[in-house]
Image: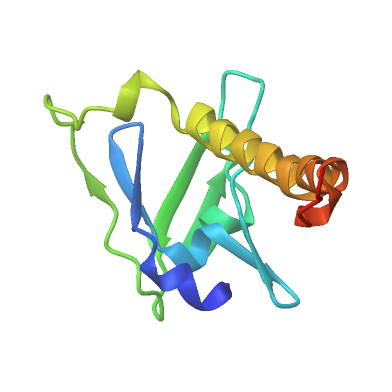
Length: 136
């Protein structure tokens, strides 16, 4: 549900020496009454930052010098953009899998559960007479 979005963590992206802040309301997209995660897998070696990332930021594109300026706009809840190095100690990943692998695992598990509930269990009930005891 979309009301659960606020319970998700804030995200900090480290891009060329700067930490950029994303709130849960930034990285979810609401369509009608359904909320979707606003990240997509990219097969390339780069990230394409779009509307979800831009929310709350004022962007200046300096094409002549190949630069982009980013700052929270005046009514934004974003933290100030800060220069910093990535910490030397990182939190360990769970099981050594990437976020994409974890998401794929969850989606596959949900698909298997759906198949079990909608196709396998009705067949089992049919085979065993819908749970009715038979006298032999």
